[in-house]
Length: 508
Image (cartoon, rainbow, N blue to C red; front, top):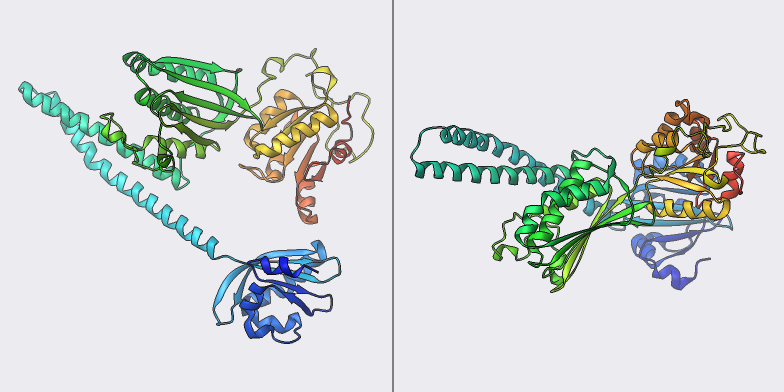
């Protein structure tokens, strides 16, 4: 039985139902919602009018079936309150140890309000995108005729006027392009093409490009990479973001000061690119408005040119690449902008064809291998020092960190982490692992699709694949095995289950 103080502290309506179907207790929120319908001794079936008719028909079969299979059910249901109003609620039903039920109804008003706000925001972005396209047509005409006039034998003063038209038109064209880009990204239609990107090469290229501005303000540039790293990003878009951040650091930094661009590996197989200046920094009250479109945070009074779109667009681009853009600033001291991205493990590029270093042709158990058993005499391919190598595909940095630590501590395994399914096949081909471990939920594909892709490859198809999931639906587990998984293990990671599934992994 749930303690009364705890039950009444809950803001959602909660019903405690006995094994005989009698309502044993209810939270204050439930009593308020039910009103007189809860008066006296009530059986759960007496509250059937609480559920809107169409939902009642659907639940009659779904809930008992789910409770019999998993001891729980969760779904959206239209409920009727004491005043007769119908509203959608997220209902959770769970069987307690005594055989009774705990029923919780979560109000979805906040969710619906957020969805409405998101729809309104998308509609606004669509309007901006359409408006931008409409503006481009007359602007192109203005620029086209102005450039034709520039070729004519005009007096010098008229040539200057034509050049002003062209300069202003190109500035407006760039502004429209940025607005359209931002609107597309915020509407989920951005042009993002991710792949492995050499970070040091990008950083050095951007710093070289802004060299004239740095020399003009006598600002020293410092690049401090910790080690060569490859990010999973859109090369063109990352260049655009870094150019904006480094350019801002030079424009707003202290004359004669320095700008540092750092490349730092962090946990979860990620990397942080830092752009640090020693300028005036920003006051705390300005930080909340930093990534809003057209916010210049007082810079418009400095005489430095800008549209206020650069940071908003950079934030949207990094988010679209699956990364995070953050900022920290201390007024009077300086600012640090940091881009966090997933990395791509390319340690094995040089060893791909080397058969003498432990990365040789895979001698693995085929996918038809039994779930458990002893290792075959030939054994799986090993990493350096004889340790087993595992490719782990996961879009969650925390899960990647956890799996890497658990496999290293338990098996001495060398884990190659892969942030999304599109990179998995190449990682398996290059690193030639003893096992592929993939999360049930992937950011760019389904586990079934990735399993089929790996199984269809001559080399990757020989490597056993195990799926890590929190779901215990037998039908889902069957689909994963049919797609090519040798087994499915629960989350958090059970190393013994992984070893049993692979059939040949073992600690050195």
